[in-house]
Length: 153
Image (cartoon, rainbow, N blue to C red; front, side, top):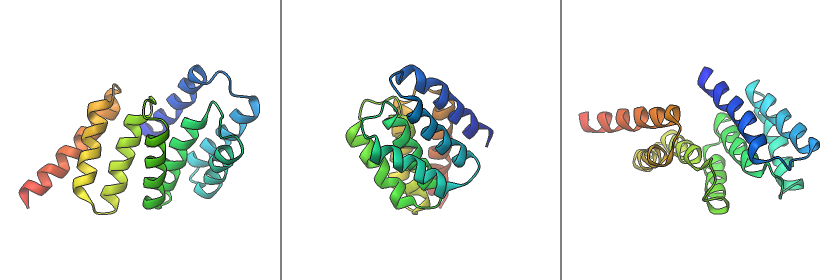
């Protein structure tokens, strides 16, 4: 939980650097969605992130909103919807700094859907692409644990 909060806080602090053109309205909607996500109000968070993507598709916060929408679907147990958002993200923003997080989340979705091989591949891709040591460690731990489990079966 502490790591999730740290990731969300870093998202809030890093995003202004990459999206200085975001309006106060955009930031207000985004922060509301993040607050709802952190409080476990996933339906309200989904509404905020979806609103941003539908009403302001060219926002400077689009990548952050898409990432949070995918994470919110995951937390709500909507793994297929989260996977769909992850795929859209990778199609639209293949060079985004959030790509490693998307691969990590994709792996988590596949794992929840009991598709271990795609989960493993995505965690390894996240590990390969990430410069964030915490994300690399999480990806490695999950990939390693799954591989050991498969080998011991």
